[in-house]
Image (cartoon, rainbow, N blue to C red; front, side, top):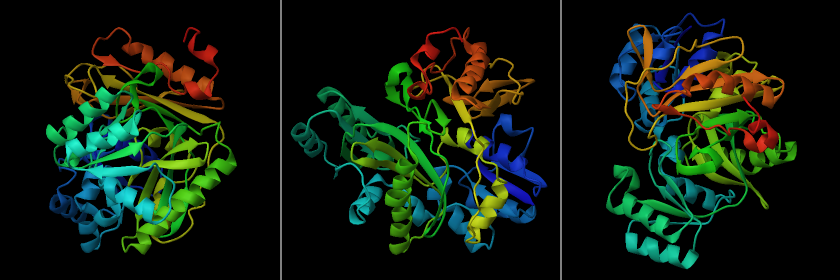
Length: 427
């Protein structure tokens, strides 16, 4: 098979690393890809939302399977156009992907179908939004309705912070079209986790749960980001917790989309919080979570290509998982998620060693070395029987960045699942 992966980030590099292991695959193309993918895939200079260009390339190079990685091409209708062209593509069409593309749509869907989530209201007027927040009090959550690369969410702990978020989104249009409408939600207390599933219509095949770390800095401080690290599975979740999330959230969401005439095929991601009343939805995504995919896929025993082919055919892929844990930490450009500089040289890090694997996100080649080309630059992950061992391998590898003022990373990824003493000893 020839496989085309659309996208250029860590999620897509992770997909390519897994696809490369498939004995069914002859050649992998990445459009547009990044520098770190070049050892495994041929990069193609086509933008991820260039539907005509991507289809022409897929036809010319006899691509047997196209995998759409990021949310933007999904919302641009890339899957719809591939389907019209009679090409095999893995991902939801534009209508189904709206479960991520519009927070308003997702909340209304959950309300209609009784899927547990936080109470909410939708606003376009800043004064009305502020009056609502005055009545509700803080902490409170403010979200841009549309796509904002994982950064359009503010968990406001003070009244001033909440009103600043409203002004930035509705008045200053911080995220452009994405924040012309905002969703304000009640703050939920509990442990967050992510649960992804392969979906075709009402068929739902759940993966292992993972826990992402959204805040930029140690101790869950600072602004929300696209994710600063993750680990899987999540030891404090019981089998009952996971079964509840599948049966009360993932399966009803898939059925709801089908009932609404927009059946979902692809990866349905549920960002969840384990509350005293059980799991509730924070957000839905219409693709693999990033960085969650980077610690979940290494635990998957199956051939990913065969899984996707089976799901597209409506067959049970019979998912199998390794025992043990995978943990990963993101290295980001100094200043992220706000303004940051590109073109900063990275230390020499082999992409794959016996204990640690590097997944490239915002990098490019410059001569014989890599330089930064984005906010989240790369992720280092390790698999081990014990989570503590996996995290120790990762943090030892990341010491290579400690003398650089151009990059930073969190030093407390997986803290909730590890003994406190782990983070006080010398790594």
